[in-house]
Length: 235
Image (cartoon, rainbow, N blue to C red):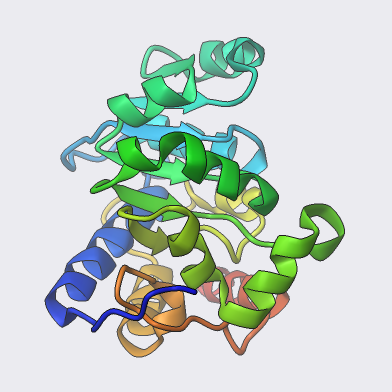
């Protein structure tokens, strides 16, 4: 059973703010001309370099952030690293965790328990962006646990001690790749504003230790993607 701990509002606000800043770092990664912004850079580790991990990590490198990609087969990531340039590296999961001040996990949800068993000690205390969604046909029984207890609580159970932030789990990776560079210099998307409002008003956007229950958003992934497309079309 997951231990119920009182919510610390200050800690929740801090991690919510961190999640917004990291999300904005992707959505506002570069100007329309492809030039990076002058915002401070951070080292980011990525566990899982598939569609989401590769796309988000690639946008971070374009924004000037050093990114360390990892997977079960790091030798298979050499083409990705070569394409992204000198800010991208690839190696083991241990190396990615040690490298990153922030770690993005983007793997099939069924792999999360093993990641927790192998790396929970090294992830403890780090801000961990959880982009994982449970799919019953792929992930099996753990999808039932997610449905029963909520995905944030379940992720925190398997990643004890991590400062967990749910992010990048409601949009298709192609939307991030397609829309990240549309903004002209000096303009700002309304989408981060929408994310801020959701983080303030909904627990199910940002889950930290102490949050006793998480339920999937009332609006589905499809609806979220459609809303994002409509919002971006107005720019």
